[in-house]
Image (cartoon, rainbow, N blue to C red; front, side):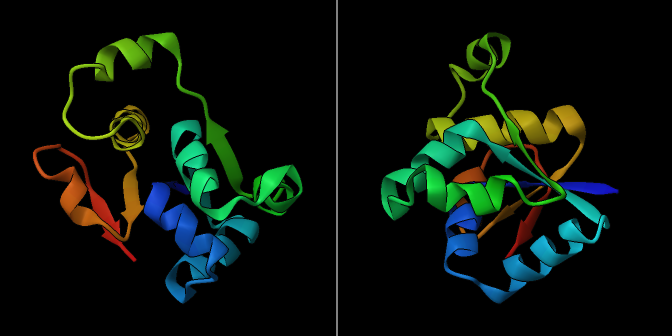
Length: 119
């Protein structure tokens, strides 16, 4: 099962029912892949969609989706990296689990060594 990290832009696309992201969600629900959501990206997305706990339940309780907390170790490691916190957290997690990041904003990863899936 191949993991994919959803960054803030991909999570927002999920809430917009963007077809390429919805196809990955269906694959995750079928057990074909795992979608991983960094908690910092969840916070950034929530600031825009204002879905609240009930709105997130359908996403976070879906089969094949898991959240990735920002641990102290990761926070220290990414503290000096370029970009916003959600981007740095996504990069850290992608490197840790050898996963590609799903994004609609590939330019924010310039200078980072990470595989991207532009959706």
